[in-house]
Length: 299
Image (cartoon, rainbow, N blue to C red; front, side, top):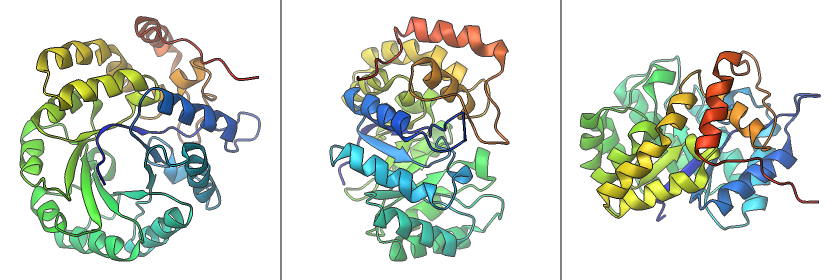
């Protein structure tokens, strides 16, 4: 799959009245991404509060995204669980719901060995029924998928790439050496994604794209074309957004911003809480600086 550019890790809107999925707001968010040029969408990942979704909500959300997207861009579903058997089952659910790929994060909390990770991802790729993108985010999982293990997985025909959220230049350099026609590297860290793409990463799986899809796709296009001067300017314009999105744990700040844009409520599921009022003025400033205003709803 020729997947490149800005890939949005979608937030999941919930209704304030009953904490149910707000599918109308979700539709607006998906349309906002498509109109902004986003090249693919991740549903039910960490930004989408995938761990807080009920069993019936996960396939419903994937099915909704697939229906609204209607083949215009690939849909990835976050299917990583704490055990291999559960991850395979979740990946099969995503496949049945119409997802194009599974974004599979390293198992959190259980702390497998590198051999355990190799066998985990291999079995998910063999049995999950859709292609897999590996996802490494040690800050959340306490589990680091090392480049040597990625090298062993990169030749599997059902594993198409890795979303790497570690920001170190050396880690990205090691992974970029593993690139091939069938295996690509994607940044999972907005503040360093420009550097990664200039070095050869194929794109970014972005939280910031929820708020500023056109700006993130513009950044990706400039980086993938190698225009370092334009990349620097585009990236600097987004730094205040990156800083706000990192002020409190993801997706707390991004859901506050989406609420301000009319793309869903600020509701999160416990133990996550809404953005602290201390950051509201900063958020309003960032939206104004980016020229972002509430999305008009159709009649």
